[in-house]
Length: 207
Figure 1 (cartoon, rainbow, N blue to C red):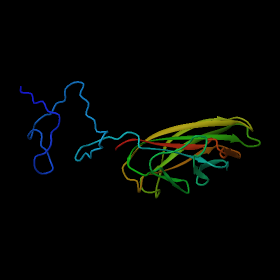
Figure 2 (figure 1 turned 45 degrees about the horizontal axis):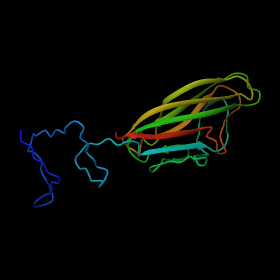
Figure 3 (figure 1 turned 120 degrees about the vertical axis):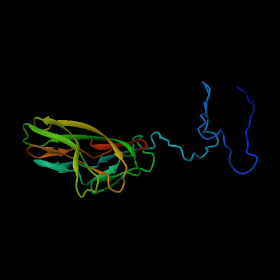
Figure 4 (figure 1 turned 30 degrees about the vertical axis):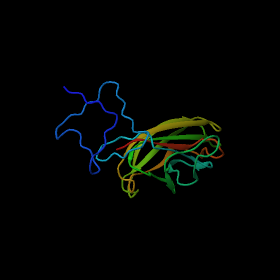
């Protein structure tokens, strides 16, 4: 095996350099570092999986009163701000409780919902769920749901659920958030600078 020792390889004519021939395997020695950070070259025709490029948080800005039955949180959403919070990337968009993704990829979605039991409440079953649609909410299905109980007036209870979503169509794949309470008048706690009820979105990588 021959060894060629050089510091730089440059093209003689044209704008491309070909290493090897069709079917050639190019091996890198153990401990080799291939550094793309200095000049940020463009890779074409190479399948890549990016790291986390999007992270965003949205919260409920005021208490939502709910009676017996199912409900969706369709109003009073705002991006989390203050107290060191922030987001990076393009960020999510929201309209009437419908959340849209800025890009395709694998997304981790975490929904935290804090309950406050209303006056006269004894024992109520509660739940939190994520609704998923792949047709821009012409139809939808529950993607994940978790249950709990509040036992008396003034009680607080928090439920947190997560879902990993493969987003391939940002025009149609969307989410809503809500839950269920078995009886009485209760409140989903929101408002102020504290993240009581809200959603965290994180893009983990390419689809």
